[in-house]
Image (tube, rainbow, N blue to C red):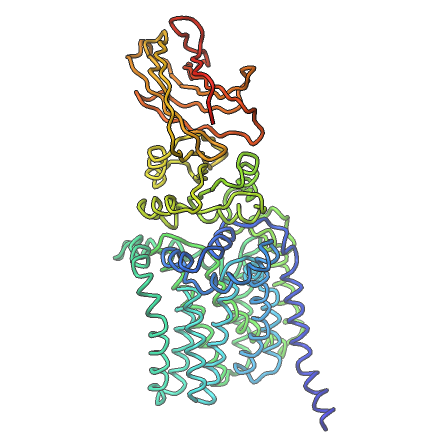
Length: 609
């Protein structure tokens, strides 16, 4: 008897096991191939921060902190693209047997759970985000758990079922604000099943509120600011209509499809519902799925409107419910006509095949991961630039965490440490916080690099102005949309040199003072006097040269007043004796301004370091 029961159990679970393995295989395809995307860089940097910073930054961005908190200890294994994405793969795979378990409670027809689970194996939006190092695949897990608990509550309205529903809901809300919409459908279903037991559900809901209230309090300022981005009133609501089509396209993954998938899915659902009678239990279960889909859809549309931020990723939430009702419709279709069911499956395959097998550069390809990337990106660019110009003792600051994560992903043990000074969307830190962080870095680096996405534009302007005032500029360079700016933090022990060198354009270099900044930098100040007799685009150059006059380090900048700061970055391999040379030149032509007594530069002598 036991052997026979074991064989029956094996036969019952074998299809689910095979579907789970298939889900794993589909989600491992090209897992490491796409470079880390913008949000994945943010994930890596965010999860790498100390716990206090992790919490605070979560209160200021778009998502609660549970996913990043769970990922933080995982990073001890490494930060390769594969390792970083594996937790999402695991969550995506887990959703397949969970969909099966929910469908078994949802339908008395044994074929429906298998059909729903099979659809989840290959549902494009779910596969897509099961390969992305973000919270979206994980979000599906507590939503499914909540649905399972609600269906169990329908059969057995026990305290355990109510507490399970509360726990799953709380986990979902700590992963994403948008989880409230499908979870609301689940709670409405549970309440409709046993109106007389509403008190137990209310007590469970109170636990959810108590468990989520600390987070809502911590993030209240950010939530108010995000929601204030949109408007209100009839005109504003009509403006929200522009998100209806993109949200639908995201839900059914219309990208790359030769025909809009809705034109295939809708007939399948309508014909499936029209074939035969629908039992009361099926009607209630279908109601749960439909309400969850509708509330998720409306919630994402309104959320995009109120925050002025839309992304199709949020429509991963109703994916299992859509799989449930499509699977149910396909099974009913097969019961009526196998040929019609095969035709429906073939139609779905034709519509969705390009999303998996389209060109790797295709904007909507599942495996190319280009759905939310507008411009070509090179996550290795920052590290490639900085690695050839920095020393291990330097410190690199990023104005957005995404680029910090890209740098961390490529950096090795001999590369400088990174920090952050966030002045770009979605977080604009107050300047006093940034100043305190830079000043408190220990050990205090003498050479600072700031990687400024979009340079000094917009909210970056106060940061750039403070840097130019607080430190000694050592050079800056644009690469694409990023400005790399180097600065020197001066040490003690200033040394002064009087010059009195007069230039032909009326300016006089009165003198200079300098101090070493660590072992690999010099801070220099120049004092100028006089009135210019020309209107040239005037620049100042400062060279540190060897005995033969060859430049070893230099810094050029626009002449802008009587006092000017310069930072000089010294190479690791340099001669023992360095000589300081200062001059002026026309920035448009490169022609040097001569001195009145001859020559085109002021030699200030040996620089003792």
